[in-house]
Image (cartoon, rainbow, N blue to C red; front, side):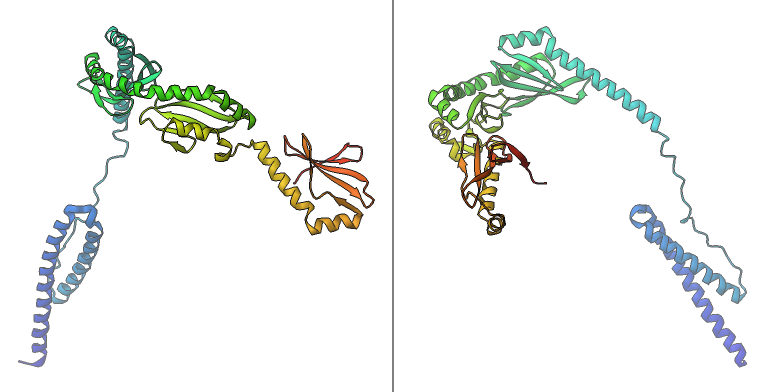
Length: 376
């Protein structure tokens, strides 16, 4: 056997082994691809890579078979074929129609449910029996007695068995239930009414004490002295009390009784009882800033002017002109006045700060306004 023939046999054997290996690898890889394609979201990238590899392998295999003079087979893959998606708006008309149906049904049930609990004879009789007054606020019905909230009914956004349901809860959220009939509401009220009445009865002496404080002459005189006044605030579902305001109408603090937990507060100060509250009321000016906005502005401007007239650079400026300005202002009823004099002590004008507005004016020796002094 000559060398050329031996080389041909060896080459043929190597290429055959290579072909067999590629075919085995191809079969195993295709099986792996089928498994991977089952979870397309997680393996889409991997499938794409495998498909690319298989295509390259197929090309290599075809080249090898071509060298050997063998028939070239086609190893196609369906991996690159995309399944056409249905247009995104295929069901849009159905969604829209169903949404309209459900919305109209919900609104209809809302009106029906609220009307039932607000106007039906059964519910109105129930309210009269327990001295309750219903008030509708949006999707809620509030049941109060003597201006005190007892129960809150909140309509649910869905129905059960074609019936409207409400979430019923006591004002303090201690008890709750789902109701759809007057009988269910009656059971809920009967289970909680005694406890709520007892709770409000316990709060009543404290509320009366706050009312007495609001009319106490000693407190009223103290408030007037500090340019303050007290006013009853609109009762809310969970608290009652009074606002203490400055003469310009701005709120200083509120004296409140929490109707749920019974806590008493004065602004951000918690009081353990009404005695402690009274002590705090008579020292409000030490606990809070009682100044009005204008007074704050005036005091800030006064500090600014007092610092300016003592500033060495400012005094040097006046001295070069032959004048001086008072180091301390004269405290008049309506203003703080800094007198401006020449070296002989003759008053040529006044720098005046108005107490009510915080505005600064410059007057001449005849007390006529020269200008208003404002920062740009």
